[in-house]
Image 1: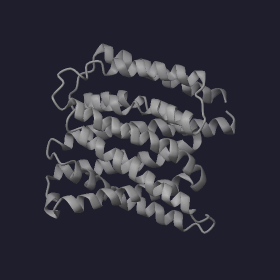
Image 2: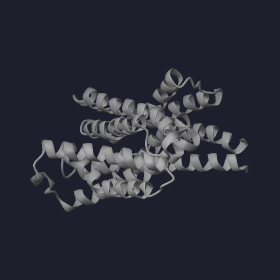
Image 3: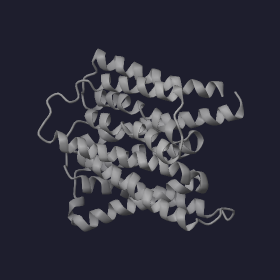
Length: 301
């Protein structure tokens, strides 16, 4: 394998690992909602436990005297993307999961690959190749099968929950497209450390403005789930996803994101006693086939 192919293959592995870690988030959120239904406090806890890691990474990056200082436009871009991609997108996702199931929430959230392709075409003048178009078609067919029964038994808050999750998808799609450009200029580690520190500050400030400190008096199980959310579905995946963006680009990262509903389905079966039907397993196979179609490009590079 050439060095270029190896570089890309590592990027693919990071993108897949990031998706798997992110897929744990809705499961952990749903488990936490069994003890407390307050997305403001839950999101703040997640970021309180995450923030020390991001500050440590920012301090470590800041020790490199060879790094050029941030340009003003990049500094403002990091603030805006931290707000949009990890504060806004996370908050509306937390809100949406109060009203709809984890499975349906992932189905809606994972329309973001299509949005990324459209945004890349509109603003970056990047047209998807035939392989990517076919891969999108296969993976979305698989997602439709995986979530075939998700909307059954819909409640009166379905539209509200679905709208909130779609807003999260749109915010994350804009984040992926815009951040892929900023990461190339400032580096993945520095970008992630700074953007996530900004997002954490927004989440914690929101809590301080809207809730009393006494709201933090919650069962120990909630704190355990918040720590898990911080480490497994926040700190780890954001760093490896940023490096994946640098290596393979936003469109490819988004395509691998199609694995998300499948892994959420699997984790839901393990942690929430959700049922895996033969139709859903067939859909999972289609999603995997679409991902393999994109991955083959790395082996031939």
